[in-house]
Image (tube, rainbow, N blue to C red; front, side, top):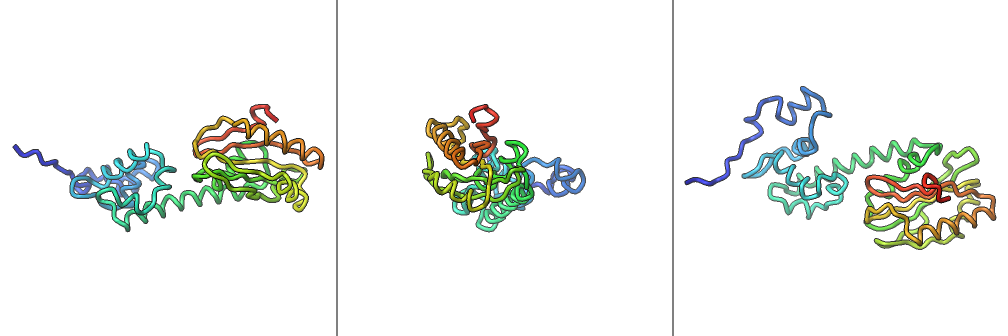
Length: 232
């Protein structure tokens, strides 16, 4: 009995089911993530079509494109059918997507909500494997004057010097600040240290007539706002 797996090439599919042809005929929004990746890599391996190989890649990262974008060339080439050129194509495409979102955030000139803060800081913080602490400096119309990285830490925390935070505020002529840092673990729950730091910087700013408007915890998928939670 022949138990060898039969592989159906994409070329034998109905024309409207082939990723490239489907994109042309039905539009890019109709394609699944696996089909889009299949277009990038072009072909599969001896036992899998490009789409099947892409589905296996996505399964490895729980179907999270952000997680896929963090894989290195060396990690991607461990998958049978993914050589260096295909790995580079995947990494380059996902990096372009990240930069595209960064262009959107760069057009945010005035903060009107916590969502604006999230969009502004997402490109800086969401993909990091370590914690970073940033401050957004605003004028009295909530226009963004500057955003500045204050400190870099490890996977579980980072130290923040209030003198650096408010020294920059005076330098930029800011009348308000918004704090932002990431949680690489993905948890949105503020820690005791997060709460204590927020209170410390709120009180420190009050002495200089610089208002603390919000403090965001940023993750890959969502955010926590101290202001929205009435914790400031």
